[in-house]
Length: 294
Image (cartoon, rainbow, N blue to C red):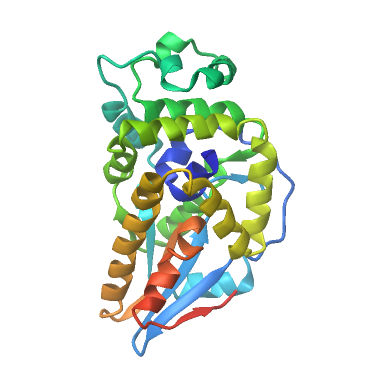
């Protein structure tokens, strides 16, 4: 389930430590859509929160949409505030009276958890005070180092810099605290599924991330949708909390924003724009026309 973190939650991706590798540059055409009315245009762009260094993903069509947009809307506006995001994480990540971290996974997963903890360079006792979701984020860094992808190269960071340098406003659909709350308010059994899912995917992590980046780069929305459906079906609670509830709120925001003239680029994790519960499908269900531009 670590792919969920990388493609759905920029705060989680930033908190997962990763190696800023020098991955081979690519020529990509990630998916881009438009929903509009006579005086308002909203571009919808699915981002990926971690990329290899020098990964070339911008196209002439994307740059034209970027130039026309007077406002950038991301999942969170402060994605570049690494120190602030880390502090927000620390404020909610711990609790007293928790069972030892090794006891929070099934017995047949404890050896894998111990291995993952060893790779991070920690001891189980250092994670015992972390809530289960927070431990999952911390441990996620163990397998990330092999992927060559880093949040420092993520699309969110790049877009934030582009708009910041141009003086254009950047808005957030959520705050850092809200994103962390999605994890922090998960029932304990869902948090443990998250932790166990992280371990289940650890052995093939580098290959999984490479495949996901390639799917994103070629605009292969179907592959992204299938991947997320496979992971989210493991927990209906995760699917509802991380996907459906948020997509419903964002769809309402986009529909309301159409009432205000202007041009906006909405850039959110690619998983939110793929599949039957995506923002795109919810917009279509409201009778809005969604055009794919790239």
